[in-house]
Length: 120
Image 1 (tube, one colour):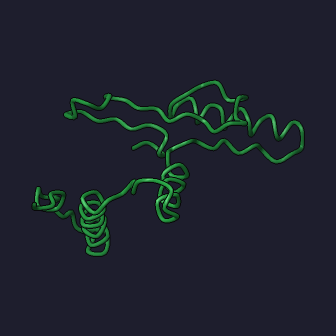
Image 2 (image 1 turned 45 degrees about the vertical axis):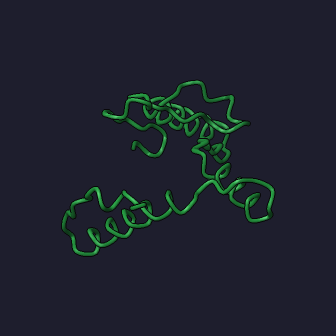
């Protein structure tokens, strides 16, 4: 995952090999996409800001976090389905805890099928 701007993967038939997240509304000034485009746009913006003696504009990327939180809050308010049911939350939590343990130990830890599978 490159700066949460691009995701590359292989092996998931229903997912593209490369996914690029779009810029947020109000960022129409940035035309180049992907991680390389993002870095080039940031550099151009820094140069523009230096010439104008102003702060550079922020270039936000829509990664789905805000939309997911909106869907979750709607669910809590009884206005929609739960976007993260137990079958999704348990494996994500297990893997996140394993990643934290790996970081704490300074060692790689295997992620096994039982980490992402919730038994029936």
